[in-house]
Amino acid sequence: MSAVLLLSLQIGPALAGALLALAFDAFDRRAAAVASAAIGLLISGGFGLWAGVTAAGATAFDVLRVGGAFSTVPGLIAILAAVALVGGWNEFVGRPGGGSSAALVALAAVASAAVAQSFDLLMLIVALETAAAAGYALVADARTRRADESAVKYFVQGAIATGLLVMGLAVLVGGFVPSGSYGELAAVFEQPSMPLAALAGALLILAALAFKSSLVPFHSWAPDAYETARPEVSAFLASGPKLGAMGAMALFMMLVGSGPLADRIIVIMAVVAGLSVIVGSLGALRQRTYTRMLGYAGVAQAGYALIGALVLNPAVAVFFAATYAIATTGTFLAATAFRQVRPEWDGSIQGLAGMGRQHRVLAVSITLLLVSLAGIPPLLGFWGKFQVFAGAITLSGQMFLVSGNALMGWTYALLAVAGIVGSVVSLAYYGSVLQAVFLDDSSSIVANDTDGDSEEEAPSAESPATGVVALTALAVVILGLVPLFLGASSLILPFTVR
Image 1: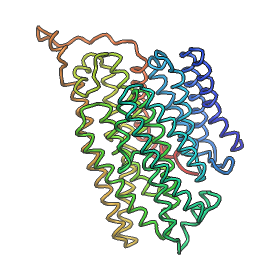
Image 2: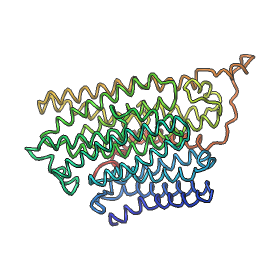
Image 3: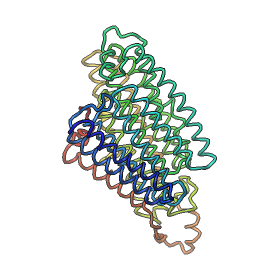
Image 4: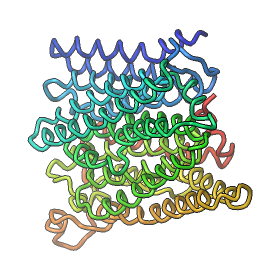
């Protein structure tokens, strides 16, 4: 199968679904619109996952790669976008313009997939800005004053990141690689006398990708955006675009991390990774709002993914980002489910008190997802963090014992320590949610329980979100058990760049 045909099968159904969604929404057929977008994404995602396992790497139009990780990551992004649409079905269908919002999610998914597939600097900037524009609109789509403020903040900071990206593009394309091809770019960075201007250009590109991944110091937009956007929209924004950006960053680090100036780039980005873990973890500890806590936790998770990218093994970084994306989609959709089964919920962590007694399936599902994000075995998130930390520790030992490079040895060692400590701290802020869900009593439940008897389970409202959260939690469990029988390589192989 040709690369162009394979690419068409991966993005064609999603684009067709988005266009149909816009057409149906114009005639106020919101259910048909959301269904069209979701079905198109599922078909595209299925083709992408299939190609990721079976297809060899190839280049379409000289700018987009397909096969291997370049198909697996786009496929997973499309699947997660479809999951967000299905989980938020009631919300998308129940409000004017819901079909257009679903179409925006599908278009953002296609653009995020193109970010991960880009093998050309010019294509990268086009895909990044397309995904960003859709993201601004999706945040503002909540149509509240706070959402408008968050969207403007996101847009202003995004414009600065775009400026950095354009400057980096001007330096690298104008001075070294007129074609913008990654293949030629790698040759530039491998030159023994590579000029510092090329280093500056690479760092500018990495800074723009750091913004898209919500890495420190480009992270402040993320907690506000994820908190004020609709939870089903945040479920996608916190997973799909971030997964695409981390895929692009891991590939770019592999290209620039093999030359004479590689140590400087790695040390600078290691500072970014360490700060992201620290700031994200401490920020999450201070939060009292559920989705805002997840936003800060996502900053720390991006730091872990960057540690994987600094190991210069894209498969490790992207695999970790994928484990995070799957679980975080479920945790944000849980906010939609919480509000459906408890309409008076104010969004706070404390407001989830008693949820474990009222809605046990939802409570168990969110427990599994949060435990996976914390990296507790044998759930899926554990394998992602294990690969990241093991890679950093292994490289640290090699630098000390084989290469004699003490600076890099300490860099990787400190990254491993920061990641492990951050994972321990995450037990506190994820645990605060579980404490509220299972141990705290809501005032309404206590007030109604005059005889001191245990609470009866409240009837659950019919909600697609609850079912999708449960299925996501089940996926985290099943995929987490696979390495016990087939080895961790069985999960990492589809994310291998080949």
